[in-house]
Each structure stands twice: as C-alpha cells, then as structure tokens.
Image 1: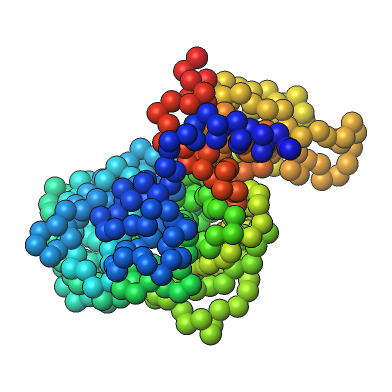
Image 2 (image 1 turned 180 degrees about the horizontal axis):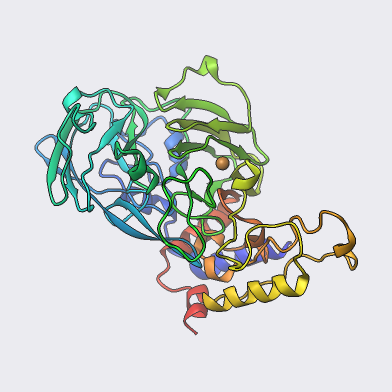
Length: 438
Ligand SMILES: [Cu+2]
C-alpha cells in the first residue's frame, strides 16, 4: 500500500465516522431537492427540477431571495483586495467583495431580478453575456441604458429562456481587465444527457502587475500573473472527482488572450459553448480546448483513471507566473543565475510570507558551463504548507513546486479517498489546521 493511500485510510478512520460527505454541501447551495449523493444524479428518480449545482472552486455562489415568482439577487460592483498568490495581493475590482464576482445559478425559465449597486469610483453597468433578453436589459452605456453613476443603483430584470454557461461583466474594457466578471449559469429545464456527477467552473484571467505594485496595468499587452477563478497555482483548489464518475468542466475566458486548456490523462468532448448545449452529433474526442476571449467551452469526460491530473493553459508563458515579484530583483531570465543566488532569493521571499520553502530540483555540477542554462532550474518553488487545504490532502510532498500560473488539477479518487477529503472539509478542526496554529 502506498503512503498516500495509507494516509487516506487513516484519515477516513479518524474523520469519516458519521460524516455525510459532499452531498450536504451541495444541497446547501441549492434550494431545490437534491439527491443525497452526487452519483445518484445518474438515477432516473431525480426529483423534477432538481439539478446538480456547478461548483466554482475558490469562489462563492451568490445567494438570492424570492419575491413572488422572481429570483432576486443583489450585486455590488466595488474595489477588491485580491490575494492571487500567497505572496501577492492586488487591487482588483469585482463584485460583492469577490474577484471574479460570485457565481449566479438559475434555471431555464426563471424570472430574475438583479438589484445592482455601483460602489466604484466611476460609472459602470452590467452586461448579460450571451443572454437573449430585451434591449433595455443589455447593459451597454448610452445605447441601452444610462451609465450607473457611483453610489447609484440600477435594477435589471428578465426571463431566462435559454440554458447554458453565460456570464455577467461590466461593458467597459478596462473594467473587465480589472476583474469585473462572473459566471451566470442557467440550468436546463430537462437535465442534459448523459448526466454528470460533478460540475465545475473555471474563469480564466490575466493580469499585468509590475514588481512592487498592486494595481493591474489594464493597458498592458503582456501579462505576468495568470489565474483560474482569481488565483494562481498552486493556490488553485484542486477539483475532486470520484473514480468512474462523469465530470463537466465549464471554462470561461475574459482577457486579452485565447487559452488552450489541456487536461492530462483523459479525453473529453466539447458538449457546449457560450451559446448553450451542443448536439451530441458534434462531439469528438480531444484533450485540449481553445477557449477564445469572450467564449465559454463546456467539456465532459469520464474520470476513468485514478491520480492527480493537471488542467492548465498550455501557452508556455501561462504555465508560470513571471516571478518578478517572487524574486524581486530579477524577471524570468535564462542567464547569470546561480544556485546560491536563486536559493537566497527564494528563502527571503518564503520568510516574508512566511512558509517553508523546499529546495529546488538538482542541477548538474557543471550546469553553468552549458549554453542556455538555466531554463526551468530555479523556477519551481514548493510551498505545500501555505496552500494546504482539505482538497490537497494526500498529495505527494512538494506537489506545489510544479504548479504555476493558469493551472489546477482534478483528483480522481476512490470512494474512500473522496469521502475522507469530504469529511475533512466538514471537520471544524483537523491536525492540518492545528499545525498552522502551533
Ligand atoms: Cu493561456
């Protein structure tokens, strides 16, 4: 038995007893009846109208209240201090204290009211990207409405007759690049077939933040911080799937670049776009999907193979952050870097957070003599401890060293492993957290 598996079994024994796993947290997100266990979503007896909510790792859902038959949401545009990496907090703009904004989930056919408040220092509006709604709800300043001035409110109301993966964003380019975007998911009246057991959403963003600065340069054409749901790897929370389950992944892009998002170890099919569900006759196997600007791509796959499988943008420079702030006195460079210098830079950064820095991978004795050295040497910076959370439990030591930029992973887990992590998510105190307090 491997060490990882043994740790899981110990964990299950300690935390598993009497705990119900994921189904309750899913239920909490959803006012309609939910199956007790996500796998039962496959079952023919799912109550009518029930749907599997999309999970947006590292972001919350926006709650709503009912006013007669109308779902009422409150959305506030405001500046947000956003920690995108353990050692980097930026001054972004977002909604309800969150960047990207909280996820809105509704049903096809719902009447939706969004009471919008502008707490930005400038005028803005909300555009409902992809939704077929009356022109006066379209959120384009001067064309469909007056700009919403600072301190003002505006009420949007429309019926959602479509299904699919939509989004809301400010209809002003620079505000978009400051982070003003969020998911708007419309679940179908009749569940998609085949049904899935897990449904995850990822928002792709890119940021240009100069060293020792906190404000993104929204006029820049080059980007040094790359995020999924507002955080760079390894801060991205791993997605979890039960072995043998079917997974839906919705990927949304609002930035300056198109991102080829690649999944390791599994093939998927594209089952939808920002325009809704695609007919099954159009599905074909792939493992990299290009998500263009202002597009959403929905992919589905069977989680057939156990392991921690990476999901990442495959643009080489998006598989890392520039490390300008990380190493302070250097940008990414491929010259004049020595082992001692790199180590002392990493150590001083690690101390400033603080976290325990794991020594980088070995280099050859005469490495400096080889033209081109270094390339990836000195790039990786293990920080398991500072990004530890239930979803990272049981990963191999120094797993975080290889995680940078637009990157996350899907952990395909046995029932026992999955339930052990679900139990940790519910446990108020775990040895991991106690360790942090000590
Ligand atoms: Cu990319």
